[in-house]
Image 1 (tube, rainbow, N blue to C red):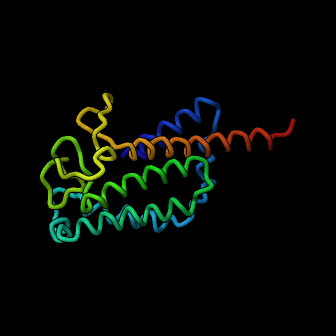
Image 2 (cartoon, rainbow, N blue to C red):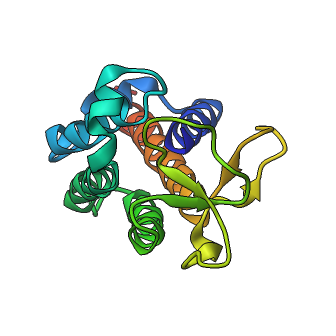
Length: 177
């Protein structure tokens, strides 16, 4: 969700500054299939009431970490794209706290019940708590974010803005006088 918020903000800012959405058609994201696989693993894993979620629950922590590692591999393959290093920083921060806490992200408020929760209530035994979900954003009530989430959103916005702005500069230089 945080990546999507950043991307939407970057697209809007890029358009307001004269950019073109056509830049998105020129995105050459390496290992996009690996990224998609990582995200696809999360869909049934985090479903609230599905037979597949219950079947995967015993393997939830492993699958959660593996899914983030797959997405991170795709991110690192695209390191040179404007904004991607910021996304990578956020993903590494999130992965570190999740691994340190047995495959779950600690959060300030208890999570809802589900077959497998990618979050767990922070307590006295929580490791790297400062990297967990504890930052409220007033525009999104009921949600808490991590420092990694914020970096991912910022980097996603930078990537989207970069592609939209690049399209504007490419189209303005290719026009005849």
